[in-house]
Amino acid sequence: MGQEKERAQAAGTHRRRVHYQGKYPRRFEEKYKERQPEKYRTEIAHVIAKGNTPAGMHIPIMVDEILDVLAIQPGERGFDATLGYGGHTCAMLKRLAGQGHLYSGDVDPIESAKTAARIRALGYGEDLWSFRAMNFAAIDALAAEVGPFDFVLADLGVSSMQLDDPARGFTYKEDGPLDLRLNPQAGIPAAARLAEMEREEIEGMLQENADEPYAAEIAREIAAVRRRGGHLETTRALHEAVVRALRTRVHFPKGTTPEEQRLAEKKSSARVFQALRIDVNHEYEVLYEFMEKLPDALAPGGRAAILTFHSGEDRIVKKALQAFHRAGVYRAIAPKVLRPSREECYRNSRAHSTKLRWAVKA
Image (cartoon, rainbow, N blue to C red):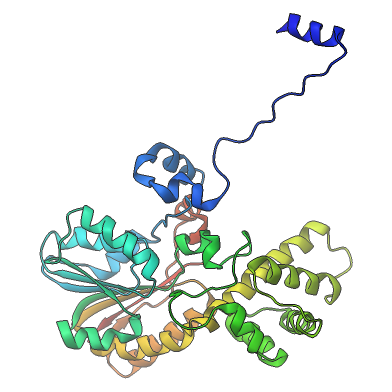
């Protein structure tokens, strides 16, 4: 190697060092975790050990606490209102020990098909587990068909698989179409929804759905983009509009560091995407309907557990449980919200905002 270097110097040439290209693919659709996760257990374990969620996967949150609350017994009938990656469903199926039946619902046709295939591959047949492509607000129709439930779980969070896939448009971290629909085959994408909203409506949406402190400034910037003939068609375009709003329309306190401002921009972008997602999927309306129908879908003594991930959801769940408890419909409800342990939050950073509430029917 030394002789080669000397010859190159003597010849007056310079050999560039080969640039390290990185060990893992950068594009989501090329990542091993999304393609064939079962073949890369070592790499996945390494990602999880660092407190991250592998792309294309979802780590179920507060599994032990949920199982304690639901107290599932073999032979019972249950409903997992949001299948997602299937982590909670699999944990509940184990508790049934081959007896009883669990129904799982989900509106996402893309991810639910993958999850259903994984669960079937584990040996759970139709005699023990059934999937329904449905919105959990239709819990009353399912209960009327199959009978009341002994236990119900509703995990209201967006699955990591949806967040990680740029094509779904749930995050500004990767550029993609501004879609945000849980079911991309129904409704209108977020870009179309945002284009039809007036400035005042956008401001109200950001305040109501995400408690965004700079709602007025962001709404004015979005309106200004449209006046200039611009279109917010991608996740990156919306994120850049949020950043411009905070940099040109918000007066931060004197002494605010650049790092603090960048953090504020990231948080505002996350809240804007949350607010728009809630609007596009009618999430509050669906949750109100579910909470109203839940008591009638439960058998006497039936248990329900609900995981929420932001204050708007938690307020709806808390008020509904309290109202039915006062009316004597529930014999017991969670006296206070349950949170994931510090250890779980360390292992899974997406668990930080989780709140668990529960109820037992009279």
